[in-house]
Amino acid sequence: MTTRIAIIGGFLGAGKTTIINKLAKSLKEKGNNVAIITNDQGEALVDTKYCADNGIEVAEVLRGCFCCKFPDFMHSARGLVGSKGPEVILAEPVGSCTDLLATVVAPLKVMYPKEFTVAPLVILVDSERVLEQGFDPEKIGDYLRKHQIMEAEHVVLSKTDKVTAEELDEIKEVITTLNPHAHIISYSAITNKGLDKILAIILSNDVSARTPVDIDYDIYAKAEAELGWYNGTFRFHAKDKVDGYDIATKVLRSIAAQYGADDIAHAKIMLQSERSSMKISSVMQNITVDNVSGSRYADGNVTLTVNARIVSSPEMLRQTVRMAVQKTMEQANIAMSGFEDDCFSPSRPNPTHRMK
Image 1 (tube, rainbow, N blue to C red):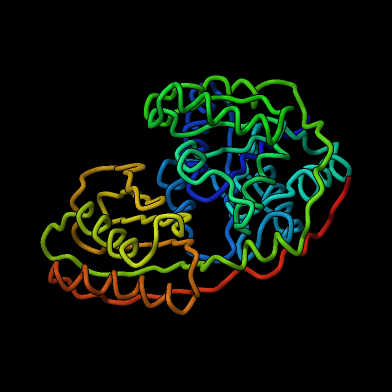
Image 2 (image 1 turned 120 degrees about the horizontal axis):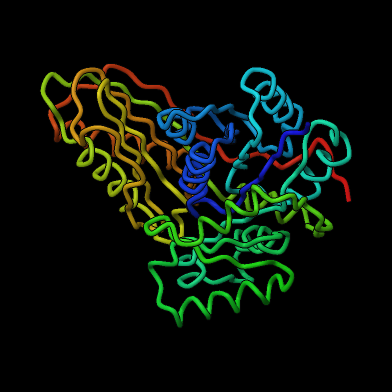
């Protein structure tokens, strides 16, 4: 019996982690054994902490995308199968990754057909971003976003509760122009509209059958290199209860104030204490609460994990995040007990395999 792998890609901030956790929860409720593989160019992932907090088995592929770390991806997938025996693995590639059909789906199909079957490729697209930014041919980063859509077998439009019916029709026209072959699903994380349709794809017997789409790796590399990539973990001890929501939103707003809305691909915070946790995100300066477990107030030993993907030099981004956290802590009269962080621009993508 093979394990089914469902890859759910899409640009930074589209809502991949949220939908994957919702899908995992639904699959568990239906009696399916499910696991998740998260992915990042660096370390200290908010996404992994969030998945684990929700009681889901999770493995990581770090310091590179699935395509460039394909042996690590296989090690994670096989490790989960060997230890937990999932029937379904939901795989979330890093948001700046594309060319998944050629570098992940095809190698899985060709090299491991007795171990894994691969569901049709699902790409999540932020409806608000399409509406507000479109796809500017002069912007290198938009090349990456377009290619993600062009190779999709199913396009899931997220955040559709934030656009009108007329605007949604306009967005669908844009998607259809880029990829007339893709099946489009409207989805809302608030109402769960469309979640059943995505779940049906995962539980079906359909397999990925799309031919890979050509890509210019020089432009792809430049698009990824535009982004500063920050991962940091800050620790402090709260003698009295502190408002975790207030702290997280102040840090995110302080970061956002230094950049234009279009430059903020995604920034997110996971704040965890011994009795509570919350995940909060910022996309194009819009802040949303993704999850709260327990109280919004935290005390005792607290960890603040920050992930930010922003069009910026790594040096400026590192300084911006550190200052945002420091300023917020000083205002709350909290002394940090320690931190570690890393900030860089992703290196040129160099996939392990590329198969047609």
